[in-house]
Image 1 (spheres, rainbow, N blue to C red):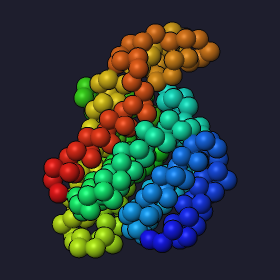
Image 2 (image 1 turned 90 degrees about the vertical axis):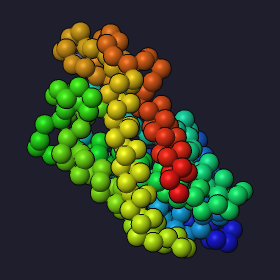
Image 3 (image 1 turned 135 degrees about the vertical axis):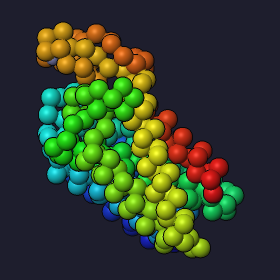
Length: 256
Ligand SMILES: [Zn+2]
């Protein structure tokens, strides 16, 4: 799309992020630059995919509020800083840049699949806990605390599928895309979300709170430091998101 329109749309989205306090000022600046590249190279469909992912994530966050993490087990989400923006949109932006360099449509679809995974994961973690069913660890099949990474539930899986399908449908706006393309993007995005849960269960660091005994992603709970019980200390939710995005990008490049 033209530079003036790209500037207008990315500034509008960045302004909204700042106004809704979804991003820190530095995070906003980085997101703005990424959005500008996505608009310029990927045109309107790529922008719509980014905008829908962002808006639906913010909406789900507001809708769920504290219910997404009733016992405070997840790392404080708060505002996203530059590192979080890089971990969550970096791989997608890289795919757009590769599309700009090579003009290979597979990179554009890889971008869409990465965004499908991101939205799928966001909706699952925010809306999943609103369901009544049990949350079980994706690898161990035993019940875990609501909101903990690696936990899956019926409502969470439905929300994940919804997010992936939403982005898949938007892919129909890409020139030459058909129903099969949309279905594949949604399927790869959903698969990436499962991969995200497996990493969240297996390698993401978790601490045991010595006061209340909860398994948590926070290094402090009940005002005391926790003991590392599972996972690797340097792997947090951002690392897991980055690795899942990479997995999705590679899978999409191979498939398309
Ligand atoms: Zn505690």
